[in-house]
Image: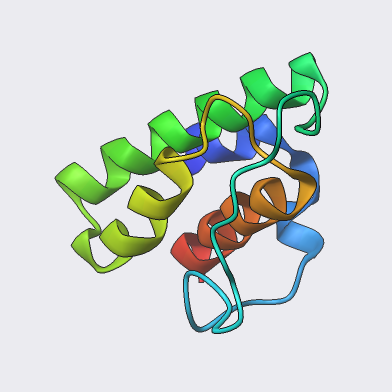
Length: 94
């Protein structure tokens, strides 16, 4: 998982550590049609979410709620949700 997550974005190591997978104020709000992120970012989000699901199933059940929430918006994620996925990766690395 760690190597796979590193391939998504290289700046994770520069971010500060987090103690929870999602911030307490995170709200799952589906984006309206056409309001999601660009196609390339969407593919990256989908790939990251798939990697996170693998981690939940095989090694980190403590992240299951956060990853489940993100999986609900995998077809049309917003910038905030992409940031939340990156936060889960940072949480896994800490």
